[in-house]
Amino acid sequence: MSKIDEMIGKAPAEYREALNAEKEQYERLHAVTKAVLAEVGIETRNRRVVELLEGTGLAGYDASTHRIYLLPELVDQSLDSAAKTFPGDEGMNTLGIGGIPPFLHRDNEPYPMPASYEELEHLIDVIGENLDVVRFLSQPVKVHKGDPLKCNQIMDRLRNCIKITCSAYMSGSESVKWFSGRDDWHDSICGVKSPLSCMDNMMDALIESAKAGNNLRLTTMPLAGRTAPTTPEGCVVITHAEVMFMLAVAQTVNPGMLCMFGGMPCPTRPDGDLAYSHDGMNLLNIAVARLNMWVTGLPSVQSGGSTEAKTPGAAALADGIRGRRTLCEFGVHNARHCFGVLDNLNFFSEEAFVEDCQAQREYLKTRPADVPLLPLYLPEDKQVFEVIQRVGSGDYHVDYHSTANLSAFDDWAKTVVDKGLLPTR
Image (cartoon, rainbow, N blue to C red; front, side, top):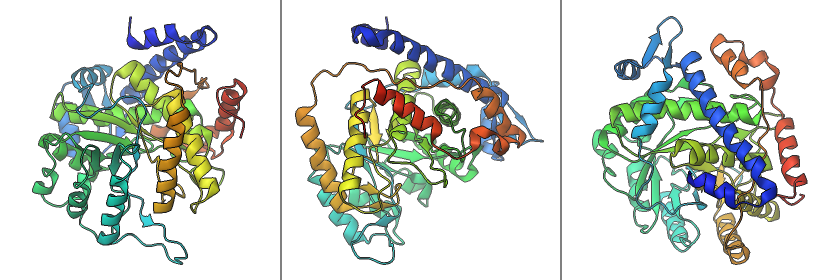
């Protein structure tokens, strides 16, 4: 019996049927993902990627469409070889700061600007005072004309936590190798843009990082209604396919290396902007985490616990509290963007960060020691594979699934609230 089967068996009786159905749903979505990679494929013009994957004998490239197709056996082989644990892993509900908001929020500042080195140094000191709740971080804010390696060296002052960088923005092979062999550093690379298309220069960076033996976080950000189907299942499958593709590349280069699943799908509002305060944002990322924790066995790092609010204040704080509670009570592995990030990841605020950290401490004081496994009630989309097939045909954006709206996520969140698993807003 697997660990998840044991957890389901210990869940309250009224949830067990729904949890068993949810597990079967993730197994089905993993199978759909492998069909997407085999039949829809990934667009790329990167000859290194093509030659690498075709060299396995389990992938083929169609030069007329610039798409590469992966047999299910290559996905299975990659998952079998990938590391399932890593040093410094603190297990469930480990929270951190997500990746590099472009601007530092300053009160009464009319023009958004990145940080200076001095401001970054100050923020790192403040973060260091809050490592009881912030257990991993990537650079908390972009530095104006900053050198990524110098920013990393400032972050490296912090001990007893995992730091995340992006070697794709570094120049020179020695910079890429700077954190090689360091268990407290991970390299976050987004090599595929949604829907199902390689960023070929980023794939070169992924290959070089894998050769160096760096710990990888494989990231992608499908947006429901913009670059992914607007249903939760459609977003999950696009996310899973893009990360499984990057996993296959990395494991072919360096079998056995750590490749954390870092896909961070997001619902969008009718105007096309991110819906980061929506309950569906947090539920969607929990679903992606569960697919990995329950089916693939990969370590996962998802997104959530943040806000669309543009300024620190009551609304931003309430969004963070609700989002982090949702993530922790339904259970994620690692979750990023949880502290101090505003306006759909555009700003980092020291004031919001400090308030978020204190709110999380207060939550941990009252959180029950043993939270039962709760069902997510992830809604099914019977057309998910057919819709994603349109990605390869160029007919995708005329489908109703790609109309930017929150209706599917509104309905999902209402179901979870009506089941008594989330409080009414």
